[in-house]
Image 1 (cartoon, rainbow, N blue to C red):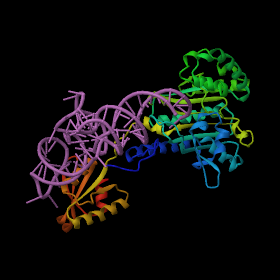
Image 2 (spheres, rainbow, N blue to C red; image 1 turned 90 degrees about the horizontal axis):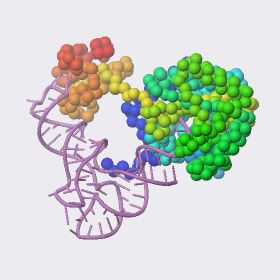
Image 3 (cartoon, rainbow, N blue to C red; image 1 turned 90 degrees about the vertical axis):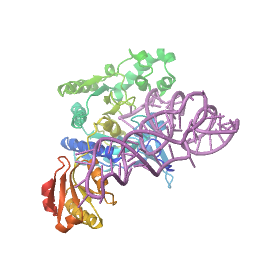
Image 4 (cartoon, rainbow, N blue to C red; image 1 turned 45 degrees about the vertical axis):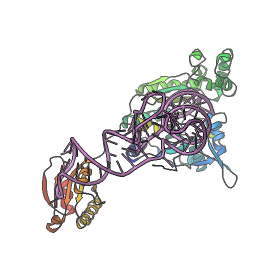
Length: 413
RNA sequence: GUGAGCGUAGCUCAACUGGUCAGAGCGCUGGACUGUGGCUCCAGAGGUUGGGGGUUCAAGUCCCCUCGCUCACCCCA
């Protein structure tokens, strides 16, 4: 078929089979978040562009080259949100949620937009489940959200997720570390890739993230060696609590993350089953963001998980069995069957039938294909007697049954 | 943004160096079995070979452009 209009690059249609997986995962997310005391928040699809420039960071790849930015009719610059945290924090401040208590625990399931070259597990429109815990500076809060994530992974049967974690320190300890790193990188500069040379000037921490130069940078200074007393205490305690929670983790000194607002611990959830885009989720602490957006100094921590990637890791389930299929012969029976079907459906019974006037055989074939447990045959004879033929599709046995919705429901359910 | 590979029926794929190559399997529809599924057999529907241009007596097959897909880089979810 020559379809003229096609979906645009990097977007996708999620068809019923996969969509049911999605809603199952979303259901589990809501369950786990309820248990952990997180309330759902829904934020706009687009925001003022400046929000992301100020929060996500001017020199980040997301802001530099991946945003869908456009001008509205009033000449304002708007951007489809490329990540969730800025919007949630904006909403937190705008709605004065801090007035409702010291701690605010929010989660969201939202569509995000980034104009990157699509590949496996990477789309231009994608969905993130994210969690923001605002108002606690305790390392236990970081442990809490990480634990939430692992509870979710377990609940949806996703195995072999590794937590990679590091601490890049607050803005205070970042300075000395950055200096040490730059000093170290200076000598290596000629052998680094062109990107790293550029990063060296603009955002030296990101050089650590480079895969190409990973080997060469093995002996680079480690951010955890430059933490201030507070950050060091926080980091040590977080690590120790993760151990007590029996959450498997790997300290990765190269992990720095690509968003500017992170302070202290940062982490990623990684799966080996995803190809090159192996991060299922990631997050960290952002203790300075809220103040920088005009709020009171407020510590916060959070993460986001890519549902597109998460769903790829979930085992597909077999289709649920349909309890009843109505096969009809002739126009009169078709209508009688239809009315009966509707009565049953109103009672909550899953029933299906063919309304395209196909042959008896075809109707049976479809009932079989859809894995129906019982088939109810209605033809002229059956209407006259008010008794249908109920066939058990497994045993092949047939019995007569009164065409009465209560009796049928009782028999097949 | 860079690189590589690839675009043939709804799906998975065939078609030697350009010459009945427009096919198969699955799926779909119908029939054999005039009111009974799964197996088998038979038949049918479905494609301007992504689009455009060029080379040629002749092009899915070669060349150019374009669009798209996939994977990787990059980055991240």
